[in-house]
Amino acid sequence: MEDKIRVLVPEKDVDAKIAELGKKISEDYAGRQVHLVCVLKGGVFFMCELAKRITVPVTMDFMSVSSYGAGTESSGVVKIVKDGKDVLIVEDIVDSGRTLGYLMEILRKRNPKSLHLCTLLDKPERRVTDVKVDYTGFNIPDEFVVGYGLDYDQKYRNL
Ligand code: IMP
Ligand code: MG
Image (cartoon, rainbow, N blue to C red; front, side, top):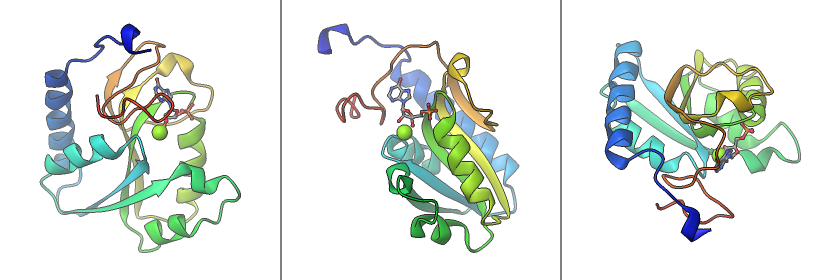
């Protein structure tokens, strides 16, 4: 796989885009505190950089999608939204939309004050489930991507 990796989005473009998203989020959440919820593991790099660019007060949580495999009553979910927070989910990529569709549905039932979604990458043409993305870094074509948190078989997240 190494040989086939090429740059789709240059690092400087990612940096610039995250700065832009951070500014927009700071404006939209003015006067409020935003609770960033990272979808592990892919969202980690993006969320950390994004958080640094947000100027309103930020709190953070991390959740693992795989922890919902057996049921919908994960303690993680309950803890994340019980306070009626302004929740902003931070994800690496929205592909079919199944993961986020499922996650948003569960979180919404916990009555957060607000619930929005921010993704670094989106492959809109792959969507099978309707998911409203509030903040998008880049729309990309239907190609498999790695780096900046995204993996192939748990590797390449660090690229
Ligand atoms: P969805 O449920 O089909 O939207 O899939 C979303 C998840 O699939 C993401 O959170 C990623 O973990 C993974 N994924 C989708 N496309 C890619 C890709 O191009 N590279 C790496 N992971 C991907
Ligand atoms: Mg993921």
